[in-house]
Length: 120
Image (cartoon, rainbow, N blue to C red; front, side, top):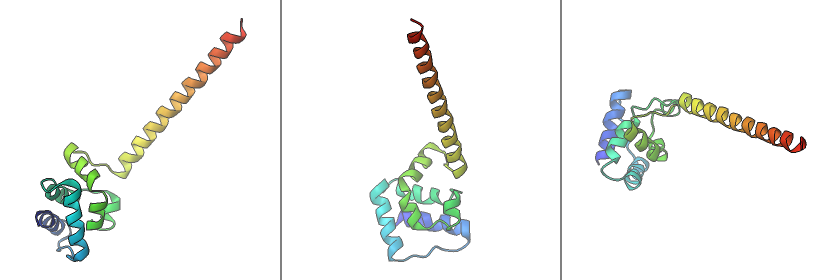
């Protein structure tokens, strides 16, 4: 009950109305507890409503997405970091730049090796 209560109160605070309770949301909440544990689930459910990820906000934070991403949301809660699309793009771009730099170093090393081998 606690995960649903935390979710519902946070939902009402954000959207000004109570979320829909039905068999699917009940099953999702039960699975949430199974996946992140009874102690962590209420905090994860409430934290989910604080996330401003465009994917969640465009759909108004349904329980199904909470369940889908519950481990990620639990990690974000534990670390105090929100992963937004902009942040994910930035990380991806940084990794792409690092990969390109590594590739350039590899090519330069190969050329250096070829020059050293051909000069003998």
